[in-house]
Image (cartoon, rainbow, N blue to C red):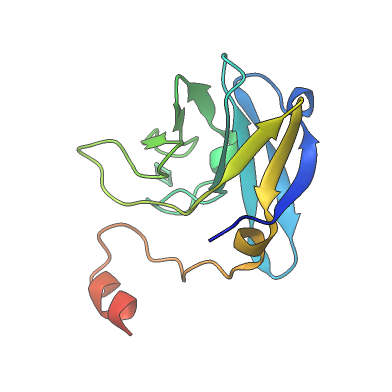
Length: 128
Ligand code: FES
């Protein structure tokens, strides 16, 4: 599938080791992160544990620590680092000439309903 890249901001608009929040109408926000090597990642701004705002977490390497209970989330995949489990949605990112692009189609796609990691009916709801 080809991407419909849309300019979001400049890399320098994202604080180093921090995040910038992209607000979406009717959908949870997306957080875009910048690490110390100027790599940029985008995740749904919702921790897979209990929905904490990952944009307020601390970036280290290619991971972000959730501000609520300190789970580490891999920014490339959106998945929690073991022994914790669960993934949040990750978004494709392109950086070109200092500008950050996200995929317009991905941005417009509704997020899956939030089911905290380990919730009893997670399997059922996913199958529905
Ligand atoms: S909500 Fe993120 S670690 Fe608990």
